[in-house]
Image (cartoon, rainbow, N blue to C red):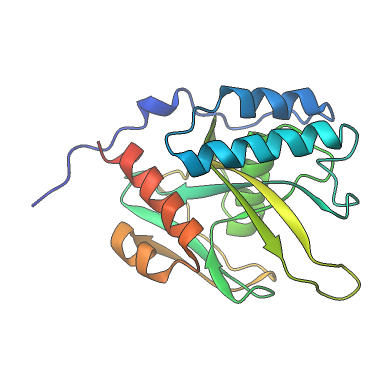
Length: 203
């Protein structure tokens, strides 16, 4: 049984670049526009917005030791039939691309930048609309103590001819069909993200 034709019009226009901004009001705008569809997502949004209010100068900087905003993007191929997952060296799990904002409050732009750097692919585009949120603890490593990542998640679409390349941050990467990606995903939050994106892309 085949799936319906894929559709990302729900997400609006896709952007190939977004200028960085240091102003946390930009991040607040993304969070304010997000409409949670589950109680846990609503709780994540409350927690993240409260964290930003409590850290109005550095919520988007990794120097905020309690935790910091991060952004990630689930990369789907142009046919919307495959998902890119990366096997992270430090965490030893299959995850979506993403990382620290490092002072950039343009969250969709951060997700696009991280996806481009970690996948090795050019020409990616991002839907500038949060589709999922997650708050999770990062274990201590080196001289960095345990801290929280307040992750804001987006959809990133790759061009048809793009081929991913492994970076130094990862053991491996793989373009996977939806069901295989769900099996390979490193934790429930990643599986949730895959299900959310699949629900948008395959309507």
